[in-house]
Length: 94
Image (cartoon, rainbow, N blue to C red; front, side, top):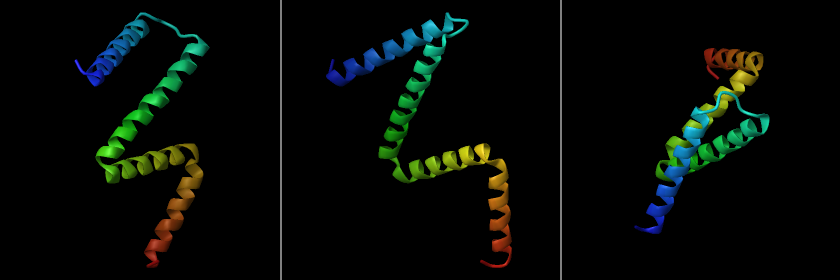
């Protein structure tokens, strides 16, 4: 078994252990929630990085759409205002 296969097998085993542990829990402590949130960010970052290496154009579009969605969710009135300005400029040919 190659080093890569061993690491992959170990990671899969650890992920399975974590899922089993989480399934057995009804509530999580604050520190556990923070640790899982950090883990989520790390996993998401690794997956995005891998996607970016495989298809950089799609990665950029996906990241832009995600950030746009987050902006619209955080600032709904500002997003609406910007959309109206953009539509008005488009309607007059700018």
